[in-house]
Length: 537
Image (cartoon, rainbow, N blue to C red; front, side, top):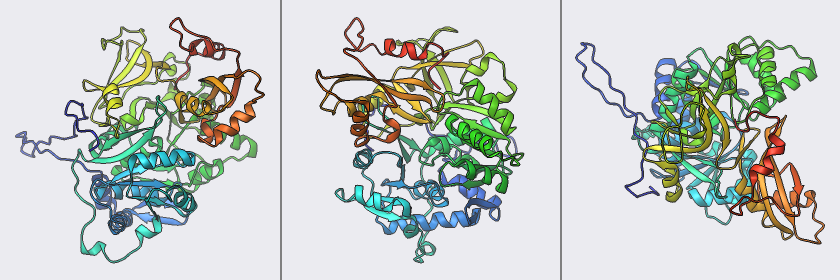
C-alpha cells in the first residue's frame, strides 16, 4: 500500500449480519469481493443473456468464463496480487469483463480516460506503475507509443482472452478480501496533479447496494452503456446491474443513432446520460424526424453537469420515462445523493436540488471548523459510508487533507433545506464540469503558464447551453506580444486534453485582485453567472 501512516482514516469494510432460520440471531459475517456479483448472476441466471455488444452475445455463464480466461491471461503476463492493470479502450464486452476479471484475480483495475492527451496518460502510467496496459485494437498503437520509454507491456483484450488451456488447471477468480484494493479511478487535481482514488472491493460493493436501493435495478432491466466505461458515471451501474442479473448492452461510444437503435432493438430500460448527451439525443430525434419506439425505457439517470429545467422538461416529454438526478464524486464510488422521479417534480422547488443522501451514505453540510450548518446556511458537503475511498494513490498529504476524522471533505459548497435536500451553489476547488468531464482550473492554468507570452491566467467556469459549463480563461499577455486565442489554443492542445482547452478568452491588462492580493475569480465569474441560480451540478 502506498500509504502506511496509521493515522489515516480508511473506509470501513462492508459486512452483513444474517439471522438463522430459527430466529436466534446468529451472526454470519461475509466479506464481499466483487466476484460475488458475477458469481450470483451466473448461478441464478447462467443461461440468460448478460452482454450484448454488436454481434457478440454472452450469457452470464459465458461472461464468467471470459473473466476466468482473462484472469489466466493476466497471470501469463506476469501479474501478481496487488499489481495495477491499466485499461485503454472504447466501451466493449471485453471492457465490461475487465471490470470483474481484474479485481477478482486480486489485481487493481485502472481505467484510463482515452480522451486525455498523451502527456497526461504518460503521467498517469508513471503514477500507478501498471504491470501491463490492456487495450483494444483501436488504441493499440497509441498505447505502444506512450509506453515505449517506460517499460510497460501492452497486450490486447484478444491476447489475454486467448485460450491456452490454463484455466482448467486452476481457479483464477479468487475470494479476495473486502478491504483489498479493487480499482484506482483518476480524478483531476486542484493542484494540477491528477489524484487516483483508491476504491476497495468493499467500497464498490457498497455502492452497488446503494444503487440497487436507489434505482431498483432488477433481473428484467436492460442497461445501456453509452457513457464511457472509464468513468464511474457509467461504471457505477456495472456491478449492481450484474448483481441483479440484468442485461448489459454496450455501444463503443455515445452516438445518438446507436443509442436509439439499441433502445429499440434490445429493449433498453435504463441508462446514464450527462446533459450534453441528452441534448444531442433530442437534437438527433428532431433533426431526423425519427419516431422510434422508446416505450421500454423506464429510467434515465443523469448527472455530471448542471441540467436546465427546459432541457429536463423537454427530455421527459420526449423520452416518456422517469428521470433521476445523481450527485457524487469518484471518491464516493461515486454516489452520494439522488433526486428520483423528477418527472413528478416539475414545477417543484426541490427540482433545483441535488436530492437527498442515498441509503447507506451519511452527509453533512458544515462550516470550516466542522460544525453543522443551519438550514439554509451555505457550507461544505462532507460524507462518510462504506462506499468512500481509502484515499489517494501515493498522495498521503492530499489524503490527510480531504479524508479527516472519518469524513470525506468534498470541496463542494451547498445548503440544505429542512427536508435535507441539498442545494449546490459552488465548488471550493475551482473545478469545472464540461459535458460531464471534470476540468480543474489549476491544470489548465498550469498549461497556459508554459506559453512564453503569458504573464498570468485565471481559469473559470462560464455557462454553456451545450456543455452545461465551459472552460473560460482570463489572461494577461506580456506587453508588445501579438498572441491570440488561436495561439493559446495550439499551445494548450500539445499539453492537455481537448475538452480542457478554454472555449473562450478574455484579454486583460491586469486581473482583479482580492484584499490579500489573490486573483479575484469571483469578480471574473460574476458577470457570466448573473442570470443563473447556481453554477455547479
